Each structure stands twice: as C-alpha cells, then as structure tokens.
Image 1 (cartoon, rainbow, N blue to C red):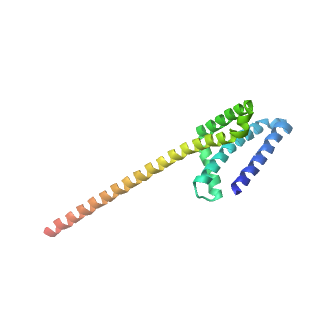
Image 2 (cartoon, one colour):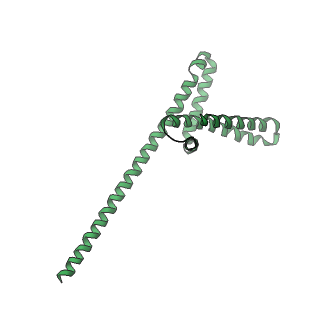
Image 3 (cartoon, rainbow, N blue to C red):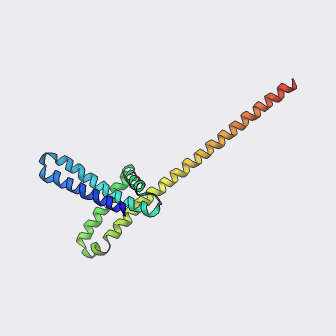
Length: 161
C-alpha cells in the first residue's frame, strides 16, 4: 500500500511539473519533454513494482529500488511495454467495450510478460554465477590438496635422507 502511495505522489508531482514546464514556462519545454519521458519510465516501473511485490517478500523500499533499477537496466523491455500499452489504448479507444472490460487486464498481462522474461534471465544468470563460483572453489580445493600432497612428499623424502 505504501508503494502505491509513493507511486501516486510521484505521478502527481511529475505530471504537475510536466504541465507547468509545457504551458507556463515557454523556455523550459525541453525539461517538460524530459519529464514526460521520466513519467513514462515511472509508468513501466510501476508495473515492475507490482509484479515484484507479488512475487518477492521484500520491504517496500527494496521493492521500489529494485523496480526502478530493473526498469533502467532493461530498456528494450521498457519500450516494448510502452509500445504494447500504447497499441492497447489505441485499440481500446476504437472499441470502447474492450476499453471498459479488458484494457487494463491486457496491459497488466503485457507488463507481466516482460517482467517474467527479465526474471527468468536474471535467474539464469544467478545460477550461472553460482555454478562458476562452485567450480572455482572446487578447483581451488583441488590445488590446495595437490600442494598438501607435494609438501607431504617433500617431507617424507627429507625423512628418508
């Protein structure tokens, strides 16, 4: 619930900034465009936040941080979610029944599809890193055991002499 309040506040603040920069401050329209881009990134980040809130047991602060980082790290997923949402809104405007009943569900499905693909890729990378660490530790243990055997052989050779 706190995450929803944070996202609502961010949306309101950024929307007010966008409208002020675009309408009242004529020299700052470039900043208004930057605010619009950040507003769209925040929109996708919100989808990632709610997907993470459902699938992970984390504190709200960590969820917010991870959702924003996940959004920034995977720009293709951001653009595909935005493009898909824009297409769904366009179709929803043409077929109003779709807008009323299915638009938001389809947008959530699209956002979850992108989140889940990213999640699977991150899981695969984590497993690969864990496997590499295990192989390195096994190799290190083998080298240490070989060194121990060599030192024991040297000691036994010295005793024989």
